[in-house]
Image 1 (cartoon, rainbow, N blue to C red):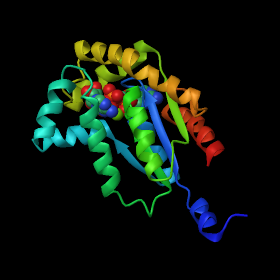
Image 2: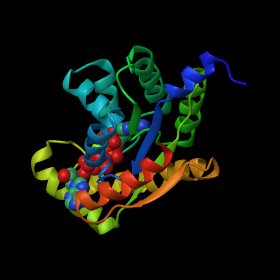
Image 3: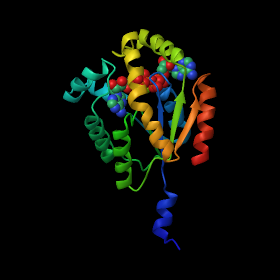
Image 4: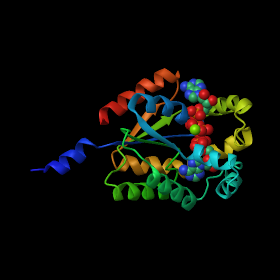
Length: 205
Ligand code: AP5
Ligand code: MG
């Protein structure tokens, strides 16, 4: 029989979500809706890196060399940044966490699950947004007119898509083997896609 301590930690179980998908797949857009509905803490490594660039930090200067070429920032830099974030985070008021754009390599996925295991948790679900390549490019070119992002131009978008296919897709296989993988049809209106996501999250809540 479980004692009261383990019962209370079970009751306090927080949900750990990953939202994954190609550049322009809608990770950020859908994350904003998910955090409102489920009261989750949003961690986007892309947003964190862009903040470092805007603040002109050493980390930002280094990261920008990779981002502007559509390449991934080295794993050790990203894993250290996430570990620091976890250590600083106060999640007591949240129902859990949604990671957007992380993990992006199998090495990052292994590191994440180790960091979670140390904290007595694990990923519950990986949502994989599936969007046709033509639509991805179209969305990013439209956004590029106003975003000011150094990576929203056709040449860099193509590079980001190659990097996604070669380095990030294996992350979905990693979570499929763990039984945590859910494919989400990512075409259609933002609301339609959000309804599909909500159904998937509700099943693991
Ligand atoms: P990151 O910031 O994560 O960018 P990304 O993966 O390339 O994806 P985006 O942010 O461009 O797209 P999104 O999926 O969030 O889509 P959004 O909702 O914005 O990473 C940037 C770079 O940082 C990386 O290339 C890498 O260099 C580095 N980096 C980050 N994390 C890293 C990591 N873990 N390891 C190593 N390097 C890392 O939507 C896109 C557009 O489409 C928007 O304009 C939106 O309004 C529109 N839109 C959304 N949904 C719809 C819809 N249903 N219909 C029509 N338009 C839509
Ligand atoms: Mg994004």
